[in-house]
Length: 118
Image 1 (cartoon, rainbow, N blue to C red):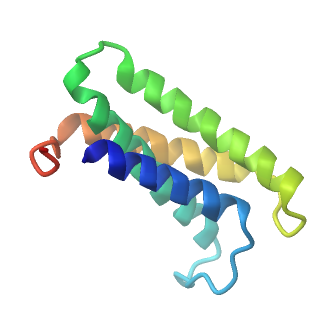
Image 2: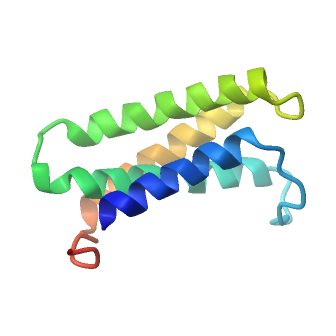
């Protein structure tokens, strides 16, 4: 079940990163976009770290963190290349990385596997 949620979340993140987004709710700050990036990548890392926890691979959380950062970089490049309404933004990559760090650390502290037991 957690694999399905993780894959679904990842696919939703891909789609929302590559399409033109209009009407996204404002959080009332000048850096709403960066907050959305932090939250999105926090969720991504959180889900995948929890999925791989049972495998007990020593360096898996680090690998997932780096994969999430690379994933964000690839999506930034793709949105620049594929969608004329989207741009590449280094600050988005920084926000993605911050989210991935927090998602990884939170996932290491909490065990949500009990919720998603098959």
